[in-house]
Image: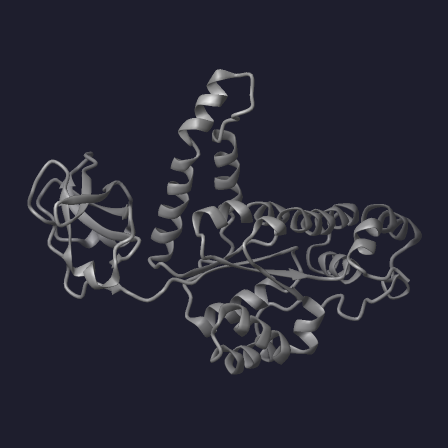
Length: 334
């Protein structure tokens, strides 16, 4: 596969070796990569005795115009013979759509992601649980230009977090085998990672699903059981993380879970406008109305403390942990 941003392929090489490959456009190298990725489907590849197949991904710098993709040559770094393209080589020329769905658990992220992935034909591996790890690693390696430590100053000057960004790009592109994809992991750490993801994918779109704390915690308890206090803390952590980072994003869309349930057509229109895909409205409306994806039905009728069925201790915990956040978001407690 070859796109404006990267190439994915595979080569046969002596067992135990890890060959470097490069991409060139005319006489200029536009990227290098290493054939060191295991792929189960390569086990049946026809190879010389003693060889093994490994995949590679090469990021292009700068991106390549769509009308020049067929001019890219991939060669082994120590050789000059181009790696022959396989039959049916896919060249991706469309504009990428990278979509991140954020929110607390039990806020409608699964239904929204399932609907959008289906209607937009976006590759989606399910809950990725990777963004936060990349973001943390990048933050640790970013250094500190204002530190008294000369080493941390050096790290900041050298942009040592850049390899982590490249690792994230390689991972997302390779795992989805596409320049377009959808990713969602419903927790506060994924939300905190959104500014990092925006650095990786400057054109990415972010949709945040929010839900009244009363119905969210009720739904969490019905789905997962466990600690009432921890579910309260989880909802607050997600909402607070979003309040903290949303100003760092170039754009985003917030959707109320209750509105998605009651007015799917209105939500579909908002999403279609945000993504600039007018034809999305009808199909997305049907998908949201259908509701065959995992639903956040538990807690939908919980609109006040009187309808929760919680005991006095749980109500006291909710007031203590969630009261301030409920007030900031305009959710009533009574």
